Length: 325
Image 1 (cartoon, rainbow, N blue to C red):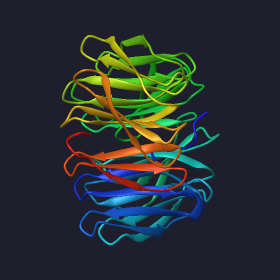
Image 2 (cartoon, rainbow, N blue to C red; image 1 turned 120 degrees about the vertical axis):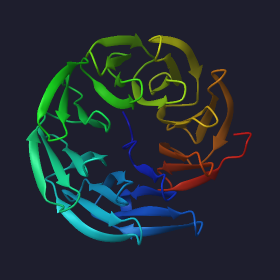
Image 3 (cartoon, rainbow, N blue to C red; image 1 turned 30 degrees about the vertical axis):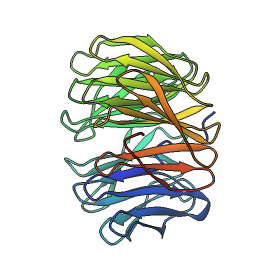
Image 4 (cartoon, rainbow, N blue to C red; image 1 turned 90 degrees about the horizontal axis):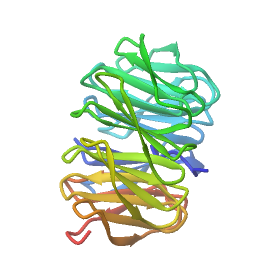
């Protein structure tokens, strides 16, 4: 269904650097805003996902083909360590408050936890994980498996703190930490589960076909769901827990990111060669940005007005966003 991981591009908002996997070359591409230059850093075989600890300025790369995570110093773009985490690492997430990195492995029921200080590892039985989200303020780690009907919840010490019945076919996770709401796209059911982090109550809302990526505007508490199967974005008012709009976009939307400063939403049209720009105030398409074919991951620096895009043709593209965008 989906071409690659939507975590293939990340931004360190503290430094303005962006990082993207270069799966074919066993490397990552690094955009340095000070030099306005993209360089390359070798990692392990077949990197698929990246996470950044902005507090320590460390970058973590899941090498799917090497059973490892590469640790990179963001200051000098140098490899500090290679941590063995078992076969087929797929997705990873960082808790900067306690300096822990959580890594899932495809076809495994074990989550590997890397200590950001020592790079030592521990493991926890957590079921199959296709997505991980970290609520830093509440010290909760949410782990979703596509075939698991419950989300596993870990606390900061990696102890199991509970389970949430969010339904099967969970694919994408997004957090509105200020509102205490976890969004879970259920790709096989054309639904979005809204989980109240305080009570555990779940509200299921309809989406388009094959909902995958979810993004939230923290300023408006509006959530956006990219529906891969019918080329739409479902717009949800998180406060009212209701669908307020359906926006038609281009072919096979897979990734989505929000600019809260401008109230703009950018959608990667993976089946084509474009990025759809949505006006969040009016829930309508503003324009379409052309790019090389099959964009599948996005990151946004709203401070510098740059959009970072991974495509099948190019591991990292940089778009400067004018006011019209």
